[in-house]
Structure formats: C-alpha cells, structure tokens
Length: 468
Image 1 (cartoon, rainbow, N blue to C red):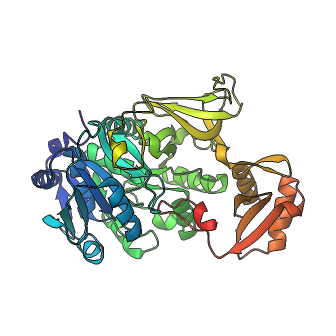
Image 2 (image 1 turned 45 degrees about the vertical axis):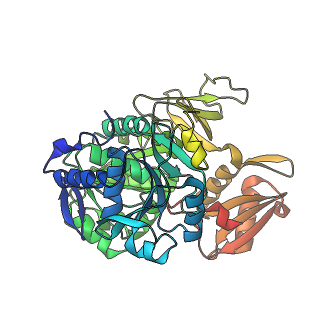
C-alpha cells in the first residue's frame, strides 16, 4: 500500500486545523486531493513553494497520493535561485502563494486551480518522459540555499519509514501535533507523514515559538506531541519549560542534530516530573528522515546515545577499509540499511530517470561507536576531522567541550588556523584561553571571531556557509 492511499478510512476525523480554514476532516482532505487530481496528470513534475500554511500541506499530500513527483522549495529561497532550478528541472506545474507568483518571474503561467491563498500554475514545459516510475519526492540538501542537488525519494521509502515511526512512537488517530519547522525540511515532513497516515491531527501554524499566537494555538488545540531540532529546545528552555506545559502534552521528540547533555538533562528531568515521554532521534534526509530512536525509558542512562535502529532497519560500524567493526567502543563510519534509504541524488531533469543507486544502504558520513548493549553514539562527522599543526582534532568534540565549560562556539578550518566563532557577550581573551587549554594547542593555532548571533538554516541548524 502506498503512502496516504487509505486515509479516506478516517472519514470525519480532524486532519488539519488552522486559523484560516478551521478544522478540515479527512473526508474534506480527500475531496481536495481528488479535485487537484483533475488538474494535474499523474507523474507530472511539480514545484511546490512551501510555507507553514494549509494550502501547501494539502498540495503535498495530494502530490504523494496522486502519484506526482514533487520538488519542495522553501518560500525563503531566493527567487533567482528558484529560476535556476526551474531551468534545470523544467517542471510542468508550479504551486505557490498568489502573492509570490505575482512578484516573481513565474506569473505568466496558466492558473488551473486556486486553493486558499495558493495557485496551481501550468507552465509551458511538457511532461517529462521516462521519469523513474518509483520517484515520488525531491527534497533539498541545503535548506533554502537554492542548491540544485536534491535527494530522490520513492513512495516506498516514505511509506516504510512512516510505518516504522508510527510503530516506534505508537501514534494513534487521537494524537495531535503542531508544525514547528518548515515543510521542506525532512524531519517536519516525516512528522506530517506519520500523523496523516495514522489519521491523527496536525495544527498548521505559521508562527514561531517566540510568538504568543503559537502558544495560543498550542493550548487551544490541546497538543499531545511537540517536536523540534536542538535549537528549538534551546529556545524552549530559555522561555521556560514549565510555561509551555499543558496537561494534554504526552510526547516530545527531538532530531536534527545532537542535543547537548546540559539541555538534554533539563528536558529529561522536566519530562520525568510531568510524566511526558521524551524521544531523542537520529536521521538523515537520505533515509527518509528518521533512522534511530532512543526510547524515553533509556534517555537518562544513555543520554549521549542516538539509541537503536528503528524497526525494519539495521546499523553497523565500518573501519576505513570497509570492514565491519564487531567490538564495542571503537570509532568507525556509521552504515545504515533499510528500505527507507533514498534512491540517490539529482542535480537536473536528466537525473530523474536514474534508477536506485543506493540499493538500500547509506554511508552516513558520521563517525560513531556502539556499546555492549547495542546503543549507538555519534562522535562527529568524517569531514569535520582536521589537523592543526600536525595534530588531529574532531571539531564536534571541541565545540562540545567548550559548551560544557560554559562557552558556545562554532569551529571552522581555515588553512592552518582554526576559526572559532563566539557570541559577543564573551571576551576574546577568555575564549582563546579556554580553547587553548581544552585542545592543548598554542593560542597561535586559533583565530577567535566575535559575532552577534550564530547564522542558522531554515531547519535551525548552524549555517556554516554563512560563516565564510
């Protein structure tokens, strides 16, 4: 069975809730997908410009259900970059906010349907021939940067991963979540997939957690599950976890990068006090988002772990020669196997004809270990291992050690020196002394740079490109 093919069985269950539309039942959602089906032929390539409103969410669900190939683009992506993508991929349709279309170079398309504040436009491009029949979704690898490189995902990839997460988190039709991240981000999309496939509800919210309107919707709609990347949890702690608590809240999930131990301990304690289940997860877009899960029961004693593989998948560690490491606590590259592993990448329209190049196996690029109980631990990225004055260092470990000492920094290599970015509320001499002591390196090895705030991608991760 394909993803979203049987959601009509949920009938009058509430699927989506927003200020613009009020509640939308599954019956109404299915009718919307059927009306879109009349406008867009099967296997059409569709550009979907996304923001956290109802229309693009309906269009995404329709695209998967109606067997289109949908390429997701966040609305913050520069219009010039969208134009470049348009030339590289030649989509037959573009779905976007009416205002966006009016102010862009795409306002000469034929509008075939309006959905709330969005319009479906037919372009002058013809339907692509010989497109891979299994291809369903194209997700960006660079947030809103506009890179032509996308991850190629099949409906089977999405369905397998969705079923695994539903089983792991025990998601039921009575559950309700709220949007906290952009739709084009694979973790948010995975949350959408699991809740819609389960017949549960999603509160569609275009406000950030800093807006009072977000928390008004959160409380009014009695949210049962809240999800976020480490940055979101960092902000929640600053806002005050006690302030966000409501009796209906039963689950917190976190993915999109390692949550540092200081924050994790605070969240775990809060969840223990309030009887909330807190799941820390690990994943990559290349594996349909989520790959492993640390069960809430193990969160405290295995706080640094990413847990164990989700159902129907495997993980192991390989050394530099590709040999499987069978002994615990030895660092190697983390390898993942599962039917949720993507088909590969694409950079243009020609690549949409490619077959599955990954064959169900993903070399993650992450350095990891496992312990005697089979729990996995991320130690850093292969491409974040550098040499300073001939000495080998893991930038992730340096950043974590600095954070534990009370100073948050972001590190980047620059020839023979290590660039150390820190917030302007610290003294440069203080940062330099601390990092020199932690690494055991001469102060000459570092260049400390004060900045007001750390640049972030649309998913809340550190934007290393903007630090150049």
